[in-house]
Image 1 (cartoon, helix red, strand yellow):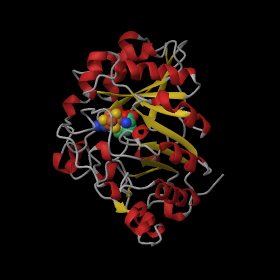
Image 2 (image 1 turned 60 degrees about the vertical axis):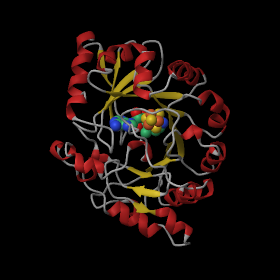
Image 3 (image 1 turned 180 degrees about the horizontal axis):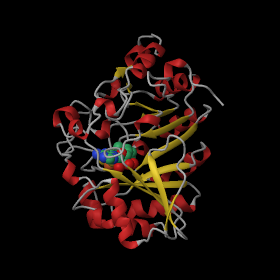
Image 4 (image 1 turned 90 degrees about the vertical axis):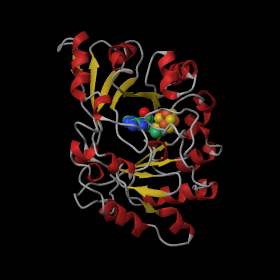
Length: 335
Ligand code: SAM
Ligand code: SF4
């Protein structure tokens, strides 16, 4: 097994083997929990990583022990040079995967397959076209839904991410689970998380316990099987006996998984974030462009990682708007 070198091991002994790279700050949807209503200030084009820079930075991480890279955004599929990025990154010895809203994924089946992508995470927050339009501010339910079916048909391992919010889609938990009856997908219910500009509050969030309570209104203890989670998994996985697919809950708010965290995030403008919730970032891109080594900066970022949620280690701190507004909006972090 490949070893992480010390620059990727933090002060709590966590080894960082998983890098998420955001390819773009723009998106073809406008999910309310991700993109602020007023939009975001985009980085000037010249401040975004080119495909060569993405490759060079990714290779440095891989040389030090990263074994998994997930491409995200914004919407990664709307980046024009995506096929080149896929090709370059697939030459590295890593498991490459992607998170997408799937609106245009039908146009990318060949480059995704030929570059070894097997796992695709797709966002879908509602099975109702009207609600989909409301949350994404775009009328793309049909295309997204059909494309999820297409991805399954094409043999990809698909996870469907649904951010659950009270009064919006909390009445769809059972519908989503029934969606896994004949379809081999994993639906992952994600607790709504606070980021800059997304009007988060605790009352809008449906917790892990509340989700499980709903599950048990339709399925008995006997029917719900607890699956073994993968190492460093952020989700608790379940399945309804006899169903082809499974479901999971990602409880970053009520039950965070920070102890086993192995993730780092690179933003589209080349900033390294050591945690989704961290308000601090270190600039890899400028240093790379100046011809300086980036390893010392990576080391510094990893060493500075807090034990839990970027220092927001209590629910009280999470509820402090000043603390989330120091962080970016999710659309510019890359989930
Ligand atoms: N556009 C792609 C997509 O939607 O899948 C990739 C980027 S998106 C930022 C990545 C993931 O972050 C999505 O699954 C989305 O649901 C999740 N996400 C965004 N904002 C969130 C929030 N406030 N709480 C929980 N998950 C969030
Ligand atoms: Fe776009 Fe994904 Fe954010 Fe929705 S969650 S606005 S699809 S980046």
